[in-house]
Length: 304
View 1 (spheres, helix red, strand yellow):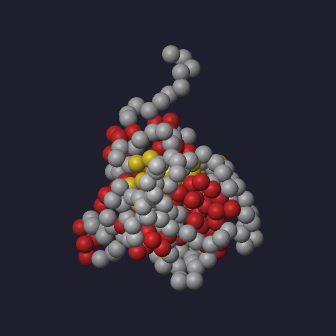
View 2 (tube, one colour):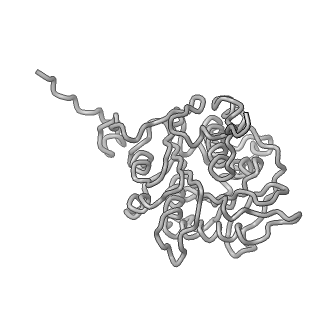
């Protein structure tokens, strides 16, 4: 019928399987050094007015540990730029967030490659893993960071976010862009994971997804002889689920593709990826130290 809004042609579970495989675009890799930023950029071979994201790495990692993930996103038509600053043990989340802002500004305004490849300035997003997830949220906030003003972004993704500094959660309240937070199994609020507190602090529409059996370190790739025959050293299940959820979310929020609207809808189930309602009480009442050492929760007194 004329005027009827187009909806998805497939259920979310089928889309998850499709998005876990590489897209139709051939991919080019470049060096961000051409704009004075250490790091890498992955782009589709051709295209104009493309969506783009800046990607923040985990603590003590760099963009090389995400080569296949970034390549995957580019194969679906998304330009991905990953700065390599703040890799040391005393890295600053605010400094990495400022790098993400500068990177996003660069790819949105500098010609990329040949054949008129270009980014649409209104189709920008931020993605991060672990320490870099906190930096991505900071970059999307209203905070002025090392002289860098906040960019206008249409989507934010925090993959296995980790606690960083005290400015993170207050700043998250000013993030108005749709956000997806991905947690590893039941690691929702621990010494090394803050998916639940971060979700509750965010100011815009947010979905909290969980990957059963997933692992924070399982997303990191390891280069060696096995990588020459297609094994990147990452946990296969973790990697497949993360790349599918990320791709669908970014295609919907950045590229306005209604086929993937379920990926930004907290009511929709994405295959065997779980959903968490952040308004519900935390089912695990142990403190962070008790969770770290595996102590059992104290028994509640019996009611009379």
